[in-house]
Length: 396
Image (spheres, rainbow, N blue to C red):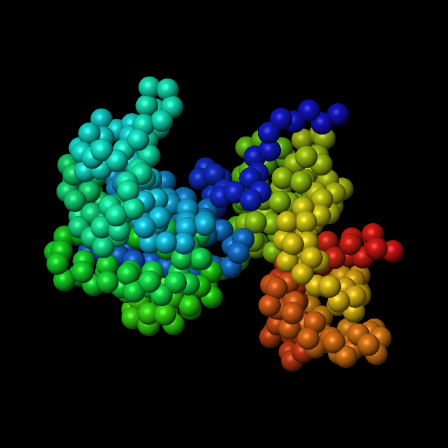
């Protein structure tokens, strides 16, 4: 009987800072820029990485580290759904309020926001910033002065500001954002000798490219930090640390399986860890537990990511037939060759196979495997072919 109450894994959410592992070189690099910012030189970083690579977890860890070890006022702003500069600036200032409301010096900073602070909840335990639209437009236009005034208000308590703008993939596609950010940095450089503010944007590599196209000068402004998949050793450390926190032992064979199928992606590490945690019944993760957890994780990942963008997006029965064959034949393969797959297709399927591969690449299901030669492909992670295989079995 499994009487567990809480999993230490967090699928779909940034990893808790106490369980964060790896990224040592990237952390060291970014902290170097933070140090320069705290001395008065404004810094801008674009943290780039694919979906599920752990951008938000790294940003959350950095925010926590800077806040606790560097005496810098740090905020993490999530911009999902934000589509205007006014709303973005409101989110930033609102988060600054929430981060400082319990400080004894809150009155110093609250004076700056004036009558636009709203208290909510019993005894005003929560605050929010809701100025009228025209005031927001003024704040956008005068954002360098806004941040300079905030820094001045807190300079006796904090050495500067650390701002993470996370999940702004929608906003960076807008020319007004690119032009506004360029103007912001230019004004800071020409009018402020001391501006201890560090700003880090996080987004997909292709969004960074769009930003560069809209405003080419921005790429001279941003220090681009790209994060890659975690190493097998880092993944192993993550599983060891997390399962140990729940007083669960992991056998070597089970660990090897979980590491292999995680593909170095934090998103998959949490899905596999969580599913395996619930599959275990004796506080010892053995190979059977790991296999069950991986299959359940593949189901969860498929329903979250493949169903919406693949199975509901492709209507062609030929495409679906090719996908079933691909998942069934190559569910455990690291790579597959175009010619080998074509040999098992019908004549009608062969006619659309090239377009099928293009579609799957655009949807982020497969990618070219350059190391294996021309015409070689691989799934972007090892969960996808498992789910496709299970879907194929169900379709029979």
